[in-house]
Length: 488
Image (cartoon, rainbow, N blue to C red):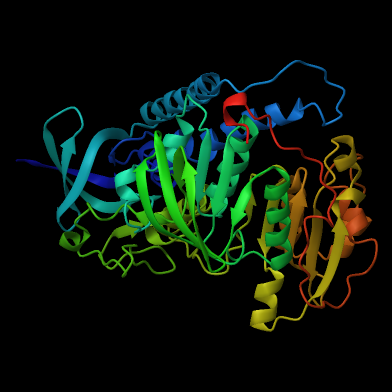
């Protein structure tokens, strides 16, 4: 087989891979991208964007709940899951067409198939349409991402649990859903499915939801889930599973030292990720993996092989699309003679429950563990006028402030929290003291205006991180409607 030579060989068309391809090809460099299945990667197809699309449909259901008091009068509301899926597919198909157009415009060649290394910087591609190709790049960029893990529990794999991929394609409503994992995916899907009308139980292995979050944040999320009518089992372990997800399953679970059986119609596995490097034959290219299968890279995202880079989740970068995009910027900067690295990046995140949880910088737990001195500013979301206009006053805001009055960390749990967090992040990037935010004229009524109330009183010395019980924060959400077939 003849081997084709190109300047840039990119494996995977996720956010870093596609932007690298479009940028380098538009500069006149011969660039080929090999994509196994999803044009544009997971984000526009089965992750960030379609999940938020479905979550918004679930919010629409909650907005017409009869006890919300919004002044909207309607009859019995039910979720048309086929309609929800159609809306999601319209968006996905439009995004795929947009990506294909950008590939054509840039001049980058998109090859649909699976790539395996045969030697350094050379891959054998099994084409989806049939046939094979051999490609060698002067430079190689690996961007193969991760996939949902299926926990090693007896009977679980045989039960055929859903991952987020299958859950986003549902055209039926699970009558009784068990969600394995209380992280980003688990919490977002649990709330959405409950609002559509499913009975939902979250099984979380750890002592709190959202591992790594401060205790007050984790407890606030627990309160939200319970107020939505979701059962949450903490310190829980699934011992075995029988049956078939989608038809009927039984999960033997130990929680808080007690054992019991959960009967359910469906299982959603949302308990971690596995890097898609197991079919790459990376060793043939001299690319080292760590013990978990992630590609070893330095702070410039260079692998152990010469002229081979890895970006995004497969390289161990934080699992956010916006981080993959920054990985791309780092690589492009260094290809052009720059010196950007991954060191010291300020990485925000947002959990798109309703209300949102948004965070950037240090958490209180991290600051205390690292011995970083800080002062704290706290405020209930009920002090934000924007929250009152939306009748969504649940939650709180807190900021960690250093001795120089600059923000060290910021967390908001409440309506439009991500927008407020973006303002705080800008201040952190610009090394702006909190007093500037306090003295700025913000538009009324917006989420950003809440910063005036947060910093109206000078930040104080911190005490222990207080847990927030579900009863100490005003609840502005009611559980979604429950179809007659799913009523308890």
